Length: 78
Image 1 (cartoon, rainbow, N blue to C red):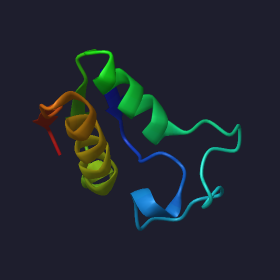
Image 2 (cartoon, rainbow, N blue to C red; image 1 turned 45 degrees about the vertical axis):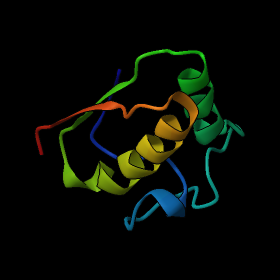
Image 3 (tube, rainbow, N blue to C red; image 1 turned 60 degrees about the vertical axis):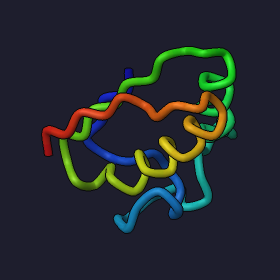
């Protein structure tokens, strides 16, 4: 389950300001983690509580669907 009020680091996930526009400062590859979850058949649910996360979740959904063959479960509250 991913619940967040802001997108992850990296310019490709949003159009807001970001102190780490190249991605996670710790080197975590979120796209790889999403892909692995899909390949392992792990259910992924996300909740939009703000429109700021829309682009990020769309990218996550594309990656997860490619890996698992079904989309993430997405609830929109924002």
